Amino acid sequence: MPILLIFLTSCSSIKKLEVFKTEVERAPLNLDKPESPDMETLNWIIITSDNADEVFAKMKKDGLDPVLFSLSDEDYELLAKNFAQIRAYIIKQGATLEQYKKYYEGDDKE
Image 1 (cartoon, rainbow, N blue to C red):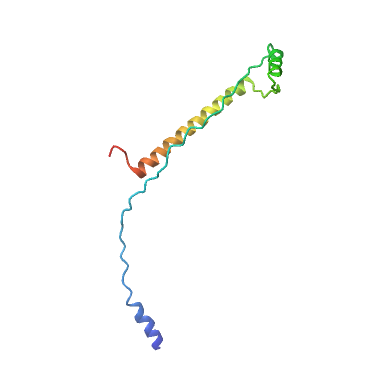
Image 2 (tube, rainbow, N blue to C red):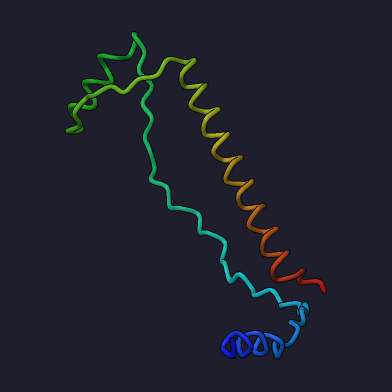
């Protein structure tokens, strides 16, 4: 019984926990804008049924292996649309990054 009494009295000495809020200043993100990649220059060769022999002969003369990777005109249009969507996505990601920086670091005008 005395042990139980010791445990019960020790609980009565616990102080009430005080809850408080402290606003923490946002740390700067320190993110630089990503650099634009250095794109390699591509040489597009348009081959039609009228110029195929001439183009292959020129490629062989230049020491190139004439290999075709082709797209129809419709597929080329789809490729252009895909690149436009990628570009729009990258622009959107850049705008999102700017909003995060503005939120965490504040506006430069302030």
